[in-house]
Image (tube, rainbow, N blue to C red; front, top):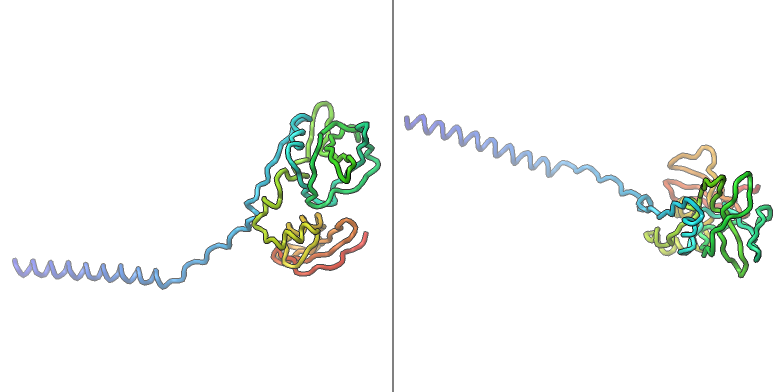
Length: 232
């Protein structure tokens, strides 16, 4: 009986030793195997969510007067003279709003009828004169506003404060330099037109740039070549 007990204990010890050796070997393998590479961090720009007003009538649209606003897309939106009699003529354009131009809107009013719809105008001052830019339209009591697509109601310098100071200096000067992203270029000189053959990695865009056209090539969303663009 004593011999059988000794044999059983010996067997149990051997099994335990083998199991311990197996555990230690597995742990060793885990430590020497290469760890999977961490996925590339997402672009911080993806996390920026600008506030919107969601205006639904003339009264709610007057929220645009509560804070400064900034133009999202430069050289895309016209503005018109607005005289002391609170009239404007949409046939006589005074210019185009600049990229990230800051506006202090004084009022939002109904304007002239165009294509069967009454234009909703944001009134602002520039160089001591009053101007109006359309931010929506109304027809039979049905309002359609595009001010949320047209204007930031938060300072973009704060929304994109993770951008380097030298990049913001170029944007504020309406200049583009190599290394800037496509969004940064849009902020500096307005929207570009994508050339045929561009893809997600290599893209070339033509920027009207308010009459000073530029052609910019991007690789992995970094400007790598900047030159004169095609004339209209």
